[in-house]
Image (cartoon, rainbow, N blue to C red; front, top):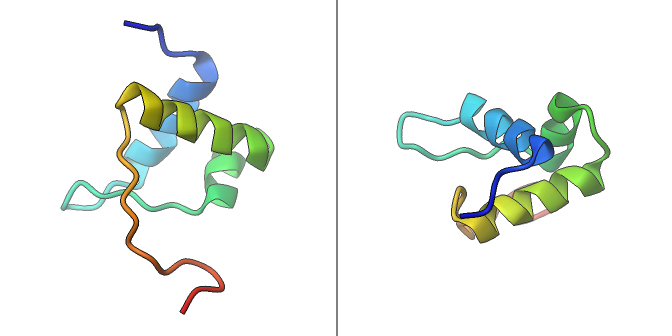
Length: 68
């Protein structure tokens, strides 16, 4: 098993902080980056790596900014 990096851990902690009572987390990427103290691209990268490692699951539920 691959060791989690510090950046990945920061991202995971942000997602954990925003988990609802159903176990779903949905903070915006700008919020994730701000709370991690990194630029958006690094937050996106860390999030993708967490999905790849199996720590997060990407649910395509639609919505979000500028979506109808």
